[in-house]
Length: 158
Image (tube, rainbow, N blue to C red):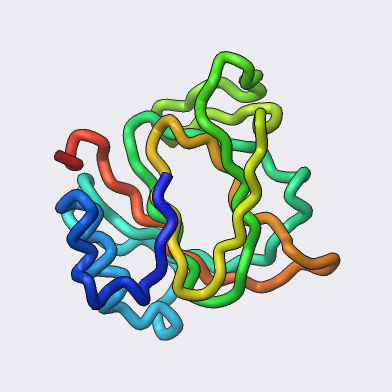
């Protein structure tokens, strides 16, 4: 997992692989506040963005997930949320088996759990070995979030 902020843009994101730099540059150039929720191409099926608006939920009500075919970049446009994380391990119990078409597997809980706060302008790069539980609330009441999830095919990252 990589955690960063768009404030790093001045560096040109030079420390990241080319496909991730391309995605971060795409995110930086868009005014997502003016766009409709939906899917936006970056590099065909190898890299695309999904814009979504929602309210956060009690963290424990979300299922931890992982992917095999795509790396996620979760970028907060507006709002904030808790992102739960742990590395893939044999201790994790699968509660919903892997769905190849959706490229997702769900787990019972994160073991061990690390909770991170993602705020406006921050992003997390999550690889297939990064089990994560997004959309968690940091407050007692749900908060509105605008987020873009970029999907980058594992084979496209070289």
